Length: 212
Image 1: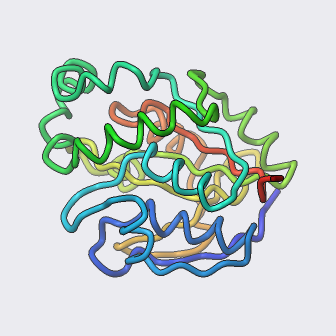
Image 2 (image 1 turned 90 degrees about the vertical axis):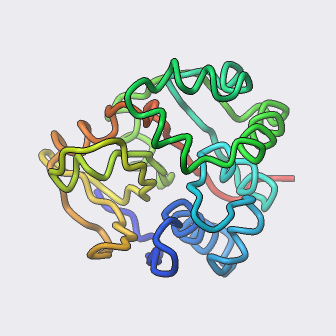
């Protein structure tokens, strides 16, 4: 089962996998083109920083997409800021905090909580496969190091999942290293990357254009 979703590269600074994934679903469902720089501005991402899932969900909602954000961890505790992040992410907290613009993240979480599109729930891959069968597009947060077979602290990477078969998952690898559309990886490795510390099993299901 495969989806036909536009592919874009994370080819400028190298920290814009979230923005590249946003470009894909905005073009796919709304036929609108956005530059990585425009999406940086809308999500509040500054040079050198990562983007959190809450930052993209609020923007995609504001731009007119119907979506749902699932995570195994509730959003509320993150509003405590650094103390909770250190406790929650443990060994990976230093790196995550180094690349996190906390004021922007807090702002996006507060905004997102008003939208009613978040649910604390860990989806199974069967759940995600069922969404794909309905032509919905999953955006999933993984640890890129698990995909690359590298030992190291969490390297957050958002990907557009474009399909699956019995043994494999296909996703848009936006880069910056070796970008490729519909990259094939074993389901076992992909699930290890999605289950890694730091991801919280974040997944955003994009259903299409929101009805006003």
